[in-house]
Length: 145
Image (cartoon, rainbow, N blue to C red; front, side, top):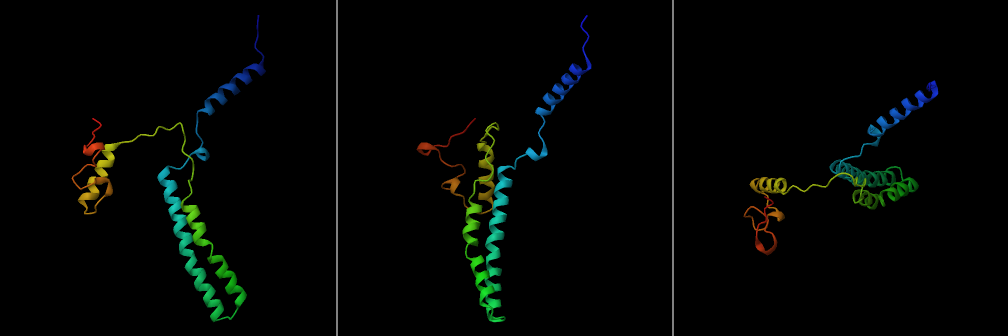
């Protein structure tokens, strides 16, 4: 008669636990959505570009009021690469897309957004001549339905 020892039962339970945990996504593994990623890069860009002016003003103030050339030069030197750094961060690719997630194009949603923008009074380059839908190849409107 085969009697399982306590050690093999413990291993089976551990394997079951590992298999169950393999399908669970941890909050630390969650990725940002592309829109959140873009908004974060825009926010960083605006902060870096906006911080250049205070550095330049602080540089001018230290030179005029304190007549301290060294501090003024350091503040000015810090302000010089800020626009370049802001552009590099703003144009960054951010997090790569997960290849397992399907990319779905919904033309109806795009048409609705363009129509709303047109109703608000702003023209849209996607709308072509303003008749409603963007013309497809050969001047025809292509419907997906």
